[in-house]
Length: 456
Image 1 (cartoon, rainbow, N blue to C red):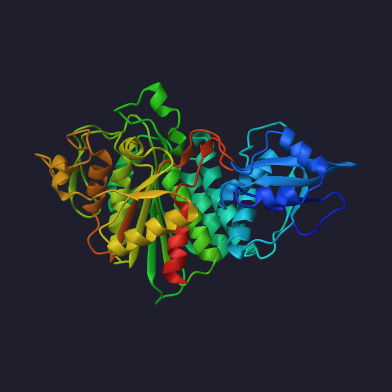
Image 2: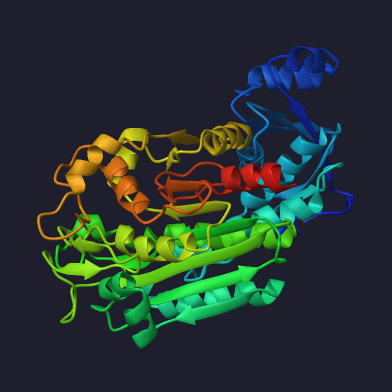
């Protein structure tokens, strides 16, 4: 994708003119009669991220882009609507917009084609916009691609061991230390991760990546890594399983975020914890009404084996929390309730830290990676009460499911200075410019924007 951004013009490079509602009339008035007649007869409008070519005596003489906004996705729209060729911006952009333009143009070329035999489409190339931060463009595009590719990979080729290998490869690229806990050590030290994953022939794991200088502010990321969620013994129906390869979306997103942190050399002491399992109804699968003892020591009654993500996160969060990080962030495809409340394009988040909430909300607005804060309403904790254990994993009501899930996780965090939980979709349900149907790094750009502002 980055190869769609080129350094030099060629003899066939077309100027790319950007217009909007405010500038179009003035620009059109400066054009020749032929161009004016062409555009008046066409359906082009200076909005909606529409793009067209203006003919000259010997073929197209320029490309026109009617820009709706300055987001990367607007530029992805231009890249996808123009025919193959090479383009160069006629007028310079502000540095931030130039960077977003390059990101969007590159992501317009994203395809998950690992299993395709078709030939690649001809490229739409853009000469690097002046002022673009090339290093930032590369790291953002590569991080989003990493997350999307992981989510899109079928579970047949992405088991817990493969998630661990992906983390090892990422760590090796940046000199991070990566430890993988499995087998008896996992069973003894992280019993809920082990219990959820033991029904599969592909054993569960806990990935633990560390990077950065001692003494720097501690940032810990935790990502849910359920490579496939059948629901366990509380088996989902066929329709409910169709997207369950994406249930490791939280893990994919925190690995992408870790890549951004390390590539930018952010001054933090980074730790990444990824509990990764496959939730299947095997002979040794955990059962409804089992009582599990967590790493933290609290006991959990299993009221639904399809509420497995919070169990594996709880053990990982307890491990993270014990180090008292200054900021603890977890990301998970946790509940359908969050999607019912906010839809697929807005990520729900929870925190009791008002400053962190304001910072993430601001970052979401700035990047267009939309987030919305939901309350950690303590009164709903009663729905997690159990008669035989300290709490149960699924609430006694279907109402407020995203909140009760967050409250469950909160039972395992009490020492971190700030804790932030994101409940994300990690999937594009319909195609949009730069965002094909499939895996998505939901919340990644918002989190990165927040972290850069916090630590730079």
